[in-house]
Image (cartoon, rainbow, N blue to C red; front, top):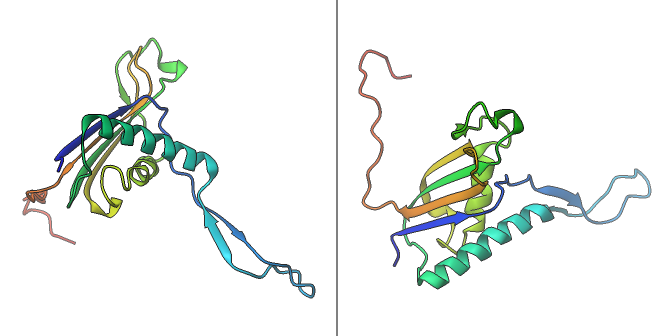
Length: 167
């Protein structure tokens, strides 16, 4: 069993798009409403993006002889976005990217793509850190993914400030 997996993928980070819903069936000839089942699907571009991550990570793990991690998992995802033109010269280093898409949607796409590859199911993830940042000057956009066993248990401790009452 592998304890830690590391992936650096030269892909532009993307967020998981919301599922689309369509109603299947026929329209009622009297009222015009559509009847039938509601089908929800993931948009094709999101499926393609997740497929690239899944295939790349599967190939890397196969070449390295790595196996999926069992048990609780700690994951870190660093999404490095292309630098905007306005930042080219003034700020040469990495900078936070506090804008859309939200980091949780970026994490959803990555975690869903790694289902059955780095772990059996993303429900195993018990600790998650996501960073969305602009690349440094000369740095290419990419995804950095770190997945490790969360054992032994080391929970974060709440602050010990006794001055403030708990709500």
